[in-house]
Amino acid sequence: MSKRPQNSWAFRFGSFAVALLVATMLSSCDRGATEQIQAAERFAEATARNNVGMRDSMIATRLFKSYFKNDYVASDFITYIQSIYDFRNHKFIRAASADVDKDFKADLTGGLLDATDIEETGMVKVKSPHETDPVAYFWMVKQKGQHWKVAMVTKGELQVDFSKVQQ
Image (cartoon, rainbow, N blue to C red; front, side, top):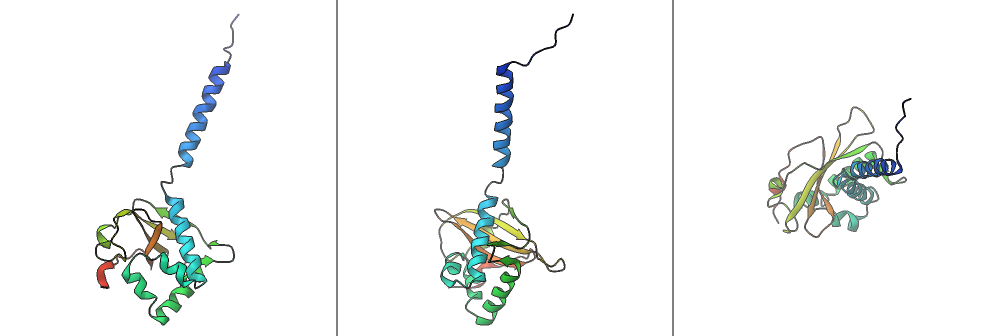
């Protein structure tokens, strides 16, 4: 007569604890992607509603700030953001993802509004509502002791010379 092995209470508890640990680790693997996407959404919200104070407080570079000094460029940019962001539902119209490994610290040299050291950089990619339009990229920067800010928004992943505009 053979005896079927019985799972003990300790084995079941251990298995549950391991499964819980793995699930927790997998859910925290975004390494700041959610935080970057939320910052991009806050910036898009402020821009779509033309909340100048909030928008300007989230701009990190002189080059990007200069875009809003020209009324025509600012108007076109606001219209563009309104085409990819639904301010009634407070989210991007299509999917957004973040590249937390995007490192463009060297590109920002001489272009930041604030000389505080850079902690992290990244890029938020937002799909356009129209398949034929290019993807929007929010170039994100986090300086020490500050929240995520936007260095630039581009249609397509272009190279940007952030030091182009001098103070």
